[in-house]
Image (cartoon, rainbow, N blue to C red):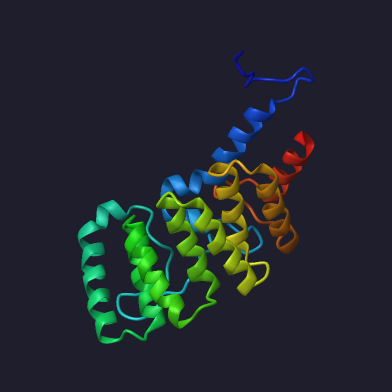
Length: 213
């Protein structure tokens, strides 16, 4: 039997259609690039990201969403940072910066290794843990992504980006809808005005999910 993805008997959207709609809303930023880690916080206005950049070639702006157009520059930054961390292996922020550049270049495995180096020096940095979780997700390891997000929240209770990303991975990759809803409910408690990269309030998504359950 085929699954009805249009409407249910009450005239509303079916559960499957609802979840597809929610997935589109919460993952649109990831389609654009690094915005996956930095959803909008309505109470703060502009897009917010976890800024741990420091050391050589660091910048204070949001990560590029068009890395491919600047690939030679990205490669140069990778080379510069690789050389820097060889000279300064105890610089946790430089290792994090290297991870960020690999992140932007869509190279999850070396990004994870760089983040691990940073976390070996500063074990409970929630921003680095969150970015590492995203890289685990991109490398096809959603369970490890969840572990990293949980570590970030344990290190900094209510860490919003980790909670949002945890919900996305639980829903999109692990098909754990109750778990996703729990993560987003916790996020809404921290920030009732949090919105997805697609512009929808997380509270509204949680409300729609509650109605279906």
